[in-house]
Length: 280
Image (cartoon, rainbow, N blue to C red):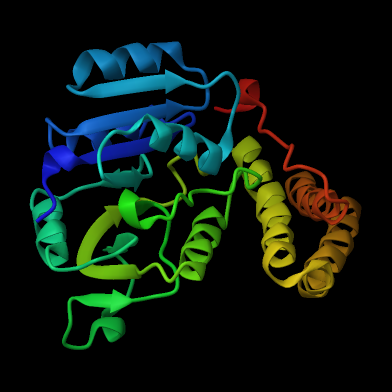
């Protein structure tokens, strides 16, 4: 049985003051917790470290994105197990005990629960554990001894980083499992307000950049181009259409998609960052 004292929770935050307290309130009080704060919120750091036991909040000098920030947190851990969480995730009272109970006889690299609204029952049949190719990144328990010193690709700022991680673990014959225990995840509210336009622009830019980067990394440049060119062409057409119809919001969304893909095609770094001063 995995002991609580051998688990460290690693949570990356960005404009997450509206969700992180509910998340932390649901975690066992005595477990180790590391917060990587990407929006340089000094007041949040003070509030978190004052309120919670065994918690350390690190302010990043800039917005590191999800993967690099998680790697920073992972490198600060001293336990054998690391629980990667999004700040808009909440544990029910019996969740962690049930989750760890089902893992007591399992050897794994990454284990993840089932999102509350996901219909994954078909995967389990009569078992409580399902071997899978990858899991969602909002809640993942990493077994450090079975990670083969492989963590997040820091070139990816946002999106597909957990899919990439699982794929890399599989190359070493690591085991990725889904556990038949449900967990509450709001989705889309972990880093800033989902309705905020500045965050929406960022999501669209990075989704396109990461999509090509992932394809190129694992299948080659040509396959990356062929698989994403329909997105590239569509973004140009829709940008022009919404420019003529004067729908400014839609115009900028498709401009961001085009820009993200073009930057990725040109092998530029994932450089776009949301303007923190414009985020509500």
